[in-house]
Length: 175
Image (cartoon, rainbow, N blue to C red; front, top):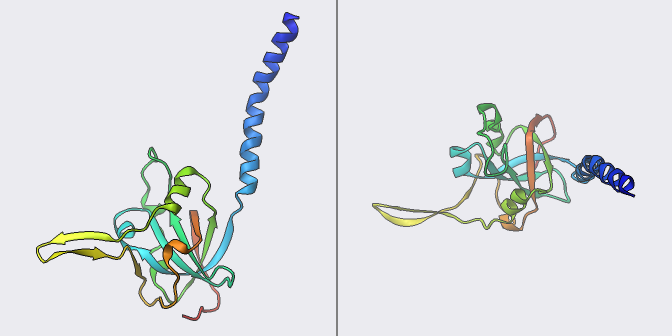
């Protein structure tokens, strides 16, 4: 009886890594990445200028998703390593006309990603010698047409994967 009990314990202990691996694989299969094409038309100027993170709105070529909100962070989590210079997104993508771009995105899955997508978008407040006021958090990219964009918080929110922004040759989007 004791041998049987010991065998069951050893077998259960040795199968635990396999169960964890199956969980990771099933999570990976459901976390499909999607490619969208379009141009960045609005962006969070503060994070763009002062961090390696970015938050922006893309006008896409997809009629089902004409506008999407995209968040980019090289690493998520409070203990994330510092980003490298090569991790910063191509600054040419932040021009609202010209080159078309591919965005490789996925739905938010980790807690940090979900919280970032649910975060209320506040304007930046300032106070100086002339008084105080607010600066919109998202501003248009140069050359972008911004008429008819739904409120940013109402847009579907996605996460751009690291290395997930590339130039594409594609037909022009009408602004």
